[in-house]
Amino acid sequence: MKNLKKLNRKELSTLKGALTCGGCPTHATYGPGPEYMYSCETYWNLPNNCKACVLVSADCFPQ
Image (cartoon, rainbow, N blue to C red):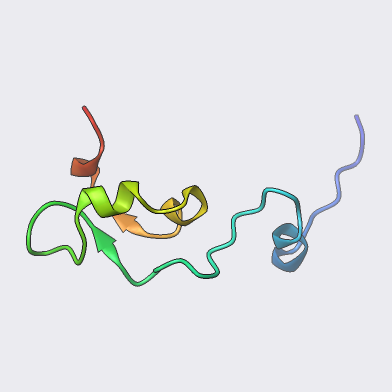
């Protein structure tokens, strides 16, 4: 078995495909109803990298 190097957060962020939330509306919440800032439709129009950076209701996903 090979030795694996532990990476710190800064090193992890430089990896290709690493999650970056720069430019994403991380303060926003998405879902149905008045308690959310934006609708589910708005959530689905976000770029894919931003979808993992925001709070979204489970009600926005098909069941």
